[in-house]
Length: 251
Image 1: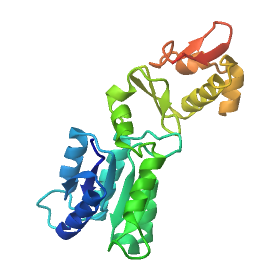
Image 2 (image 1 turned 180 degrees about the vertical axis):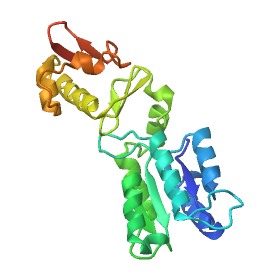
Image 3 (image 1 turned 135 degrees about the vertical axis):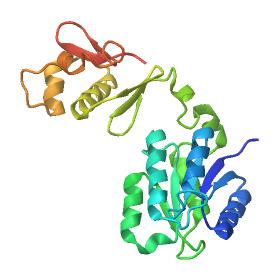
């Protein structure tokens, strides 16, 4: 039976071994990187089920000193590649920050704002922390308690999106539908969100003026057609009945 595979980004050799031993004891596989460049390369080469990230890492293998900003850069890049969330509002690719830099409260806050899902302070086993429990909780909330779920959904790969019903980031700025990814501005994303909500009620057709008003448009003369007509989603994701009503296409 295959097992979860973690990406461990940790520049302290002994700590990387300790984390690897813990993951092995849990029955998980892992791949390690000790710098930003290698971590980004590995993330682009293969899928992972979760990530354990040290904030303070070196930018390159032969860099002189580790920097918190290198870890933050990796976290932001990871979330750009893997923004999707489960029904429990957990990222499908959970990230747990494992860092001794917890003395800087600002860095912890920045990490959560950039997309971290949990935090463990070094040294492990102190401060009443349980890394193994945090890993299992994150995987459960992501809908990936068993690795079969990872194999079924992939890790945000294009293949996993193709042919699926509408999927989206929490703010609807990115939407995946029938194998295509659409990017939306603030007003457009709110319109898509409202139409998506309407599609779940069984009454998917909604008057365009009503949608725009509820989306926060201050222009009473504006039309959804004008807002979307030059967008790639027009007539593929967003449909008009020609009489002022709009809906999202069926999945």
